[in-house]
Length: 70
Image 1 (cartoon, helix red, strand yellow):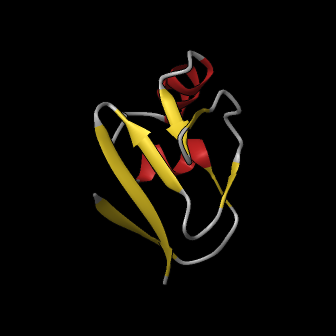
Image 2 (cartoon, helix red, strand yellow):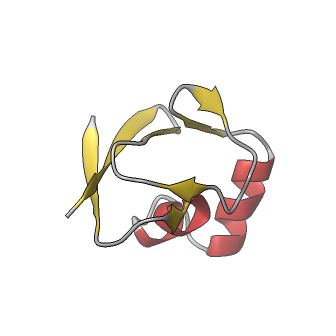
Image 3 (cartoon, one colour):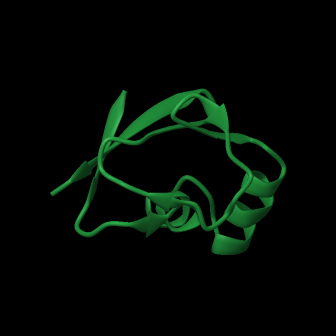
């Protein structure tokens, strides 16, 4: 599991995917989230602007990421 450091919370889910380089654009992130391809804390998440906090776990494309408030 990879750790993603965030400097503030909350952070919108699509922004994390975009800024971590997991997708090319914010638009792509929004489409993939809306399509149900992202899980948060073990549940499929379709809200693009889901507010993410330290300790949340994202699952995307077979990888797991945990958020850490730096």
